[in-house]
Image 1 (cartoon, rainbow, N blue to C red):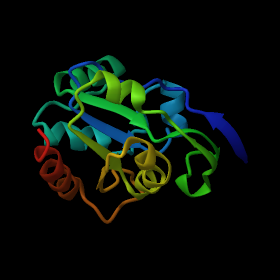
Image 2: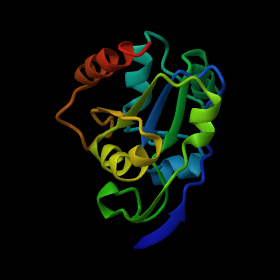
Image 3: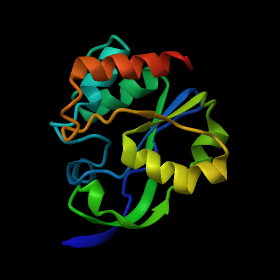
Image 4: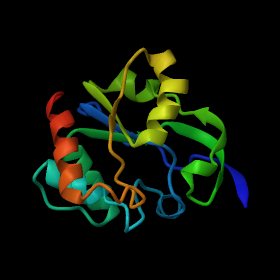
Length: 164
């Protein structure tokens, strides 16, 4: 059943953040945990740990420490929407998050979107307001089975290294 949900997770950033990674909208598991990429099948934390050649964080405090250490800000493009479970394909009635809090207070050098859904909504709602293009990275979702972890790491590292 589709329900209208307001994004419950605040943006994660500090003044030292240099890259911003945006998903589309948090999954049911992420909303339950109140932090990003909470579903164990999503490969985000495994990929980003390998990109930065660091240990994969497991707990939310470890994830926050990892993001802070590597100067990564995180949030999602969508601030509220109608969605069925965690299915990006079911998203309608979108309102975008206002990224100005992050962009005005951190020295962001690059914005990256995790997957095509985040890219589509970023281009439609956010890019016209910020004037900043985002780089689309291949999705870490298990639905993107054509991409192995190794291939994801290579693609993510190549793009992130350009701005660091």
